[in-house]
Length: 303
Image (cartoon, rainbow, N blue to C red; front, side):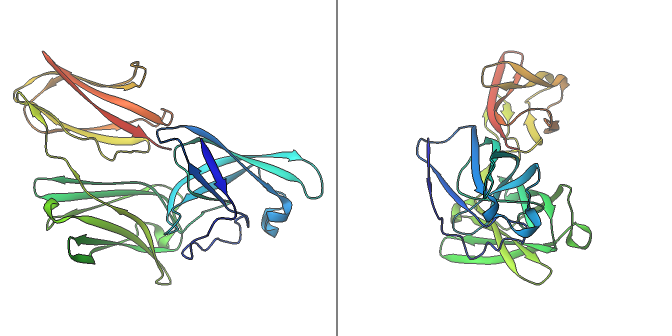
């Protein structure tokens, strides 16, 4: 279940573009997590800026962090005229919602950077940080900050935008390896975006996941990354000796939805890239089996 509170407190960091509807929704869960919901957002023509009258058939629905204003998810919302009148009443329907917070509706990019995935994994004395953007607008660069117990955030890396002139409407991927980190020191990271005018916006604060192999009788299945993922992810595994393995992706009902690999594998650390673009949002189980042994891990697909 969920509840709404209106009007929400809009973060100062969130500066809506002129194509954003002048109405916000603050929706909080009251019954736990792990849901897949349909969200209906209602508005009238009085809420629309001049450039959106009448509203288009689809709008972007943006879910934002209630404190930092950082984008968390961007969905396509189908717009329907519910009641003709003065003013007209419209509904924007968002499918497969997996998290609630501060919401806004608009056309075009909801924020300078739409971050679709981010992961950070500790392995062999270093942290591999990867993120992906769905779109970038007037973006100059990204900044990574690190903090540990007793030491506040300080910059460790600046990565220039891969978008031409800072603008892109297609997904772009980034990665950075932090070789000077230690998991025992309360390690935390912060990813920020800096636009062409030098204004900075925090996109996400996050910790690193320990990806030390979990080995049973010489058999190891490592974490998939990123997790959650959006369309594609990578798995890594290692065997004590060469053997035949079968790797598959299953839905939570136990049905095989994607055969990933079946064949001979050496005892070297092996990586496989998995494309799940045709699968719907949801929780899946990654299973790996060799002769006499099997193991599994959960992965979450978020659109």
